Image (cartoon, rainbow, N blue to C red; front, side, top):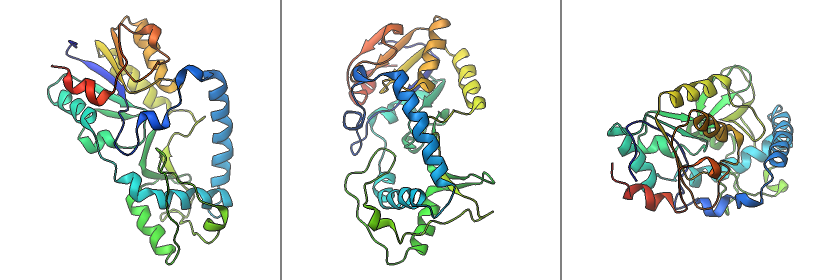
Length: 269
């Protein structure tokens, strides 16, 4: 596959610990409209529950996140992440857009990067908007919860684990150290709206590009799919590498159904 000089990319390749096959349902069975309505409902319920740092909703969420964080944060980039970073160094990738929140592209050294849905490696105060590194918050959790312990089983892509309610009742959630406000992962939850400034920025990067490559995404969420619609309207060539069908298959010029970690390193640029 030969790609032009400037490529705008949206991707998420699997890691050894959390693979696309494990966590993404078969997109052919998903009703996109119904999914987006459900996402909006879940988001409203979730954020309302977080507005009190010691509500059961907030305590349950942060206790589970605290337990899952050491394993989740240890995930490392794979060959697909490093290939994209190498292409950037060679001037072949103009900008990279990811709708996943695992910060693996940052760990791989990607510089021209938009994390469309934010990153679980940052926490934001809902009141004063101060940002805190998630690793720093982990230390505060530990200091406030000496003697509290629970153990993680399977860890979800966002660092969540399952705990029974009785396991989290004595867990203490810290407030913002600047204003005492409520803390939330700096991510766009299901149903939330992506910041308009971010959307416009990505559209501008798309306008500067001459090809779009989608790697490792089914594009079921509209926040990413909209850029494929825009690329199609601009008549930009579109290539997709993904295991299984995607929402934008009808827009693509090249479609490869395979693992990104195998395909991308094999492309000679």
